[in-house]
Length: 77
Image (cartoon, rainbow, N blue to C red):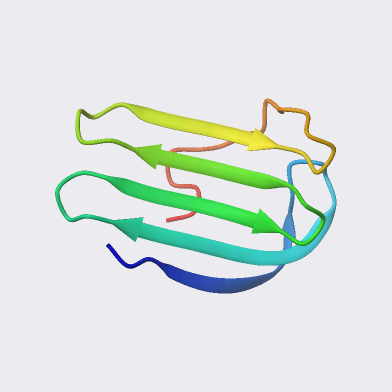
């Protein structure tokens, strides 16, 4: 697997700030899908879909606190 990184500008981070950052996307074409977002402020948003169909979604602010960040089913697609 070789993922792709794409820059983005002016998106809302889990802390509420609007900052630039980078998307990371990867998949193994067999069900594993990784979609991560890294924000310039240090926040992170993660969505991992596994081969068994389970999904892990999390958002962490730059201060290390997990958030109940609003994520819809199509976020980051």
